[in-house]
Length: 359
Image 1: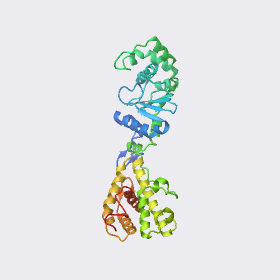
Image 2: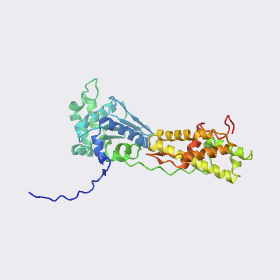
Image 3: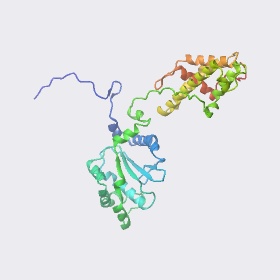
Image 4: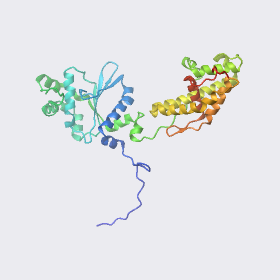
């Protein structure tokens, strides 16, 4: 018997002081429920596969005919992704029926033979299955040999499918080199490019991007926005009619600089809005901020002022004072708050010039 000294343990790797030791994503994937894996597949298909193909469709229910996800190329060719959730290592026995469906339904011309047929599983494949996929010509004889046991009464619920001569000949000549295994690591790498990964596996949230810088020239669409039209009316009003459009505005350095700052604020808020929608997947975060700012400035904006410019500057000044922070977005900066006010003008909730009660 050997007695060992107990040394001071090192800090656990991949540990978290709040949540304990984090489970590696590949282990997490194989241990999750069928429903959660199904949701991950849906998110992966939407966030990754849609960028790769012309069209992506997901087949739901038991009548998928061996196709969980169908991906279309521009010329009409397809790839098929067959997604399976298993807690144990995959072996050929798990997949003979899926290969049977592929052959049977393409034999019946219910869909065309895909360019590639991907196996997407929540568990790793065993050595026997790996060897089979490395030498796919063996699938033909293996499927024929296992037809009665694994396929005959499992491909459809309505009939037993005998392996007739024509179907047997079709299977024996089928090109199974189209079958590929999409490994767990590859699936996770692809899924990591989607905004859902961090919510499933705890990836650190991406920091807010720097605000987009507005282009020097206004596009036709931007010229039509309500906040631009209201700003021009403000400048027309305070210049006593000297400024009536964007070209006139460029001749007044002070007001043009003011206009430029408002566009910077607007674009800053729009960057925040897109980040909330596309990265955090929660438009409600931005909407809550917008409502908070509206409720904080509306009374100030409705007071009596000598002109629209004064109403604008007082309202934006009030907006800058609001203390706003969010767990996902961090501190909301003054430019963001002013930009939200301009968006509220687009929404017809704020107005600088033309109120019923005058100035």
